[in-house]
Image (cartoon, rainbow, N blue to C red; front, side, top):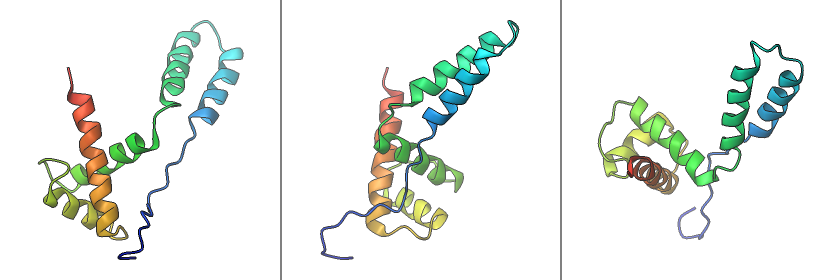
Length: 113
């Protein structure tokens, strides 16, 4: 893989927000008045997640995997890459670096005022 210019990503982003939203809409159609507010809120949350970019989804995933290993420092540091590769041994160094950068970008976007 070295020097071939490919940036293969081993992480596949699975998007099922459409299916979840469709199921919620269906359930909302036959819901009781008591259940309706909760289902409407759940539907709004599912629809809000529908347009999230793949890089953000990968970054969130990577951040969770890095933190799950006990690492608490900057998400784009060498130690974070190491923690991610320990949590996911199938990742190449290049993939882990890219994912840790995406995790740091998501974290920075979330912490902006």
